[in-house]
Amino acid sequence: MIRVSVLGALGKMGATTCNAISGDPELELVAALDVDDALDDMLEEGAEVCVDFTRPDAVKGHVLWLLAHGVHAVVGTTGLGPADLREIEAATGPANAIVAPNFAIGAVLLMELCRLVAPHMPHAEIIEQHHDQKLDAPSGTALRTAALISEARGRDAPQPCGPAGHPARGYVEQDVAVHSVRLPGLVAHQEVVFGGLGQTLTIRHDSTDRSSFMPGVLLAVKGVADRPGLTVGLDHLLF
Ligand code: NAP
Image 1 (cartoon, rainbow, N blue to C red):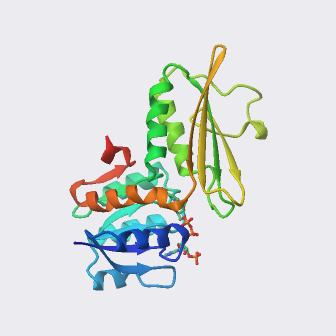
Image 2: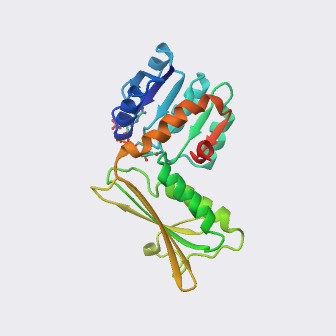
Image 3: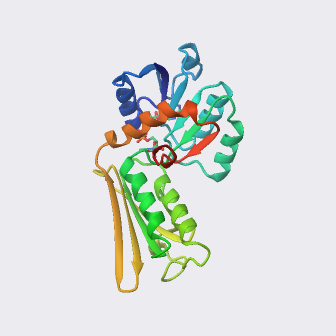
């Protein structure tokens, strides 16, 4: 049995994660903590792995604390930038970290497909749609997708078309325009539209329920002890 704690246990993702861990015969939920609880509580319960689904402004502090206390970290909270990830990587040692902007297998496959398409159709735009409570924009998944597209299409990547800097053309990440939609009723959705001569190709993924993230979270919880250092992206555990 792997002894697991959850940070952000009262939140939408944290609560779903607590249920998924409790229902898995290989895992034991030893601490379900939220904003008013002390992190030390999980040490008293002997947590070996901690899953973080909290807030962009809290997550880095949590991960550095976990690593300093020898607890492996599985991080779903978005908002960690490249400098944060370097700091986290440097703090790994006896304890490891997996950071995944999206734990849904369909979203991971969407990113893999983008990597395949981008060298052939380098013009691309991302439309991501999330529920109205989401704190960050663009989503971590959109930023990661833009980075993968940018890397895959190489140095001669086209600039986004149209008037540069116009708000209606979206947020530009690594020369990929990203459009963020926030509405009640949505969960997590992303469409990537590639444009070529006389044709477009659209790849779309929809998480219609938070259960979509749970197989990926459980895979990361079970795998984190065997992956030294920092792993960014669930793709490393799947392919
Ligand atoms: P949420 O419903 O707002 O839940 C966050 C929970 O964390 C809340 O209960 C919040 O308490 C608590 N919290 C805030 N600060 C804390 C702290 N310092 N220590 C402990 N708990 C704290 O948000 P959510 O929809 O579950 O999303 C959480 C994060 O996961 C977001 O960054 C979201 O983008 C990300 N996410 C990732 C994936 C993925 O696959 N990687 C999928 C979905 C969502 P209060 O409400 O009192 O602040």
